[in-house]
Image 1 (cartoon, rainbow, N blue to C red):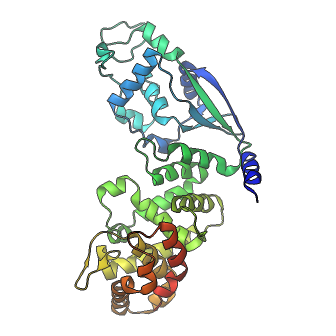
Image 2: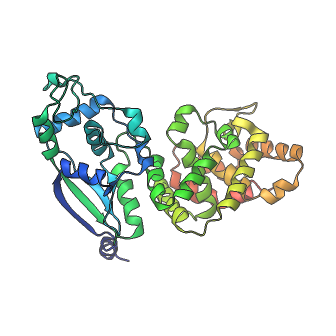
Image 3: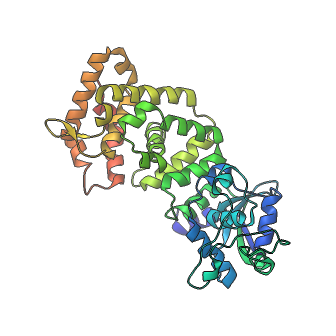
Length: 368
């Protein structure tokens, strides 16, 4: 298909609208449950009080603010796709934010700024309550009258459009990793799949063998590794495709297909990492230096060893535990010396090249 044809076809999958409205109207939509922030999204409130204060200062000074993006479902309800930090800041300020995260955050007390030093210690108070630390009725009205553009992705758009929009707007944004973006949209695609993926990522032998630190767990690194494992097993990799785009597409397919055997795949996942952890512990994806496994976690080893083990489970299960452990240790020691593996991994080798050349042979490389 020619590029122009591809562009025209893709445009037909996205139906949009948009207009300006006041923040007061946005607040009322939220209070009336016509603007929804998924509870899982609330975990991603990342702005500290200084960032929130600077945003409120922008509202007070009349500085233009970026638009927010919403998805409109068949009932006309809006689901926030982008603009979480801005909308949640306004709702926290006015005391209208609800949910567990709202209780953790508490009322927003502003800081002083270079332009507005007297903003220090100010908070939102009832309009009939003029107190020293209150913003005051006039400024409250100005904030609620501040205008923001709302870009609307309509329900007639392709099923993948909401995911694509959220992913493109949020990747590289403040505080969100690639996988946190995927997790957020997975909730709206298939909550059961999301919960299951999180459960897999917290399986003890998986956490231990992949050497996940507390910081890695917080950033959803384990969830991405679990997704990679499932994707490598079930979704063919298209040569040359950007790795993160491949994972984005895999997530959409796995979460929305309805045909995924989560029970069966969960058993494969658990058994594969139980075997690896029993044999290699937290050295499972480190390189053998001739005397010991050492160095950092290597994604190339994870891709081949984990995928290969999962596809050879019947043969591995038939071994007695000691025989299986010895076999996996020997395979892990020798894999970096395999000519095909060494040529397609390491510094200077693109991820696309690595996946194209190693995934198809992972099963053979780990075959008993």
